[in-house]
Amino acid sequence: MGLLEGKVALITGAARGIGRAIAEVYAEHGAKVAIGDLRLEECRQVVKGINALYPDSAIAVDLDVTVPKTITRVVEETVAAFGELNILVNDAGIHRPHYIIDFPVEDWDLVYSINVRGTFLCTQAAALQMIKQGKGGCIINISSASGKKPDPQGAAYCSSKSAIIGFTRVAALEFGKYRIRANAILPGATNTEMLQGLIRDVPGLIEELVDKTPMGRMAEPRDQANAAVFLASDLASHITGDAIVVSGGEFMDS
Ligand code: NAD
Image (cartoon, rainbow, N blue to C red; front, side, top):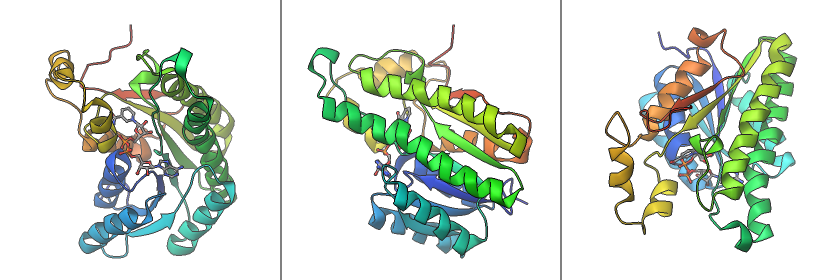
């Protein structure tokens, strides 16, 4: 029996990258998954792949985490398809690298609107549903190792990821009485389109990164997904308000 048998998860930003891997690995562990993203066509492809292996386990949902109406609709669609909602993974996130003195305020607002406000809005909508069900639940927020360490040109990204860690702790504090747990995952550099787009033009960066990673390789999306399975499973039933770093040891808190 899978670790997530009988559970229903909504995963934001799941058309590709880490979110997609979480959806796929959740389905492998027996969960029903709603795959939400702006990239609806890519969501449908992910759903097709999952349902080919695990029939009727996945649906695609058209989601923009900056628009409250769409979030409410997506929670309703998930419950209509699978009966309830037990797990929310807030994965949707973006990076807009600029030095502070040149930072366009529009990019600052966009990063915060997706990474921080989107995490808040989805958490609010999912928690209301979980509280109504009265069976507890689990919220997993994808922050970043950059939420704890500064990166050049990361003023909006790093601070938004720090905000997610703080938000997760408050969610854990407020939702404990409903048996809803909230935790963050802090990925180190992970091999996705987002990362490739950011480092493509910096020669030698990957080699440098791998060099300072004790496990000797970059993280793959499935490394993050495996942590998300553990946190969502009953094995983690007494873990809340915490932040797990998945970086192969590249990032160690001092
Ligand atoms: P990605 O760009 O490959 O995937 C992110 C997904 O979020 C995309 O499919 C995108 O369409 C979706 N998205 C963006 N805005 C959205 C919105 N408004 N509504 C709904 N969906 C939206 O990125 P990734 O590398 O898979 O990163 C996933 C998460 O992990 C992000 O929060 C990112 O900050 C975090 N993270 C990634 C890394 C890394 O090295 N890849 C490291 C640390 C943290």
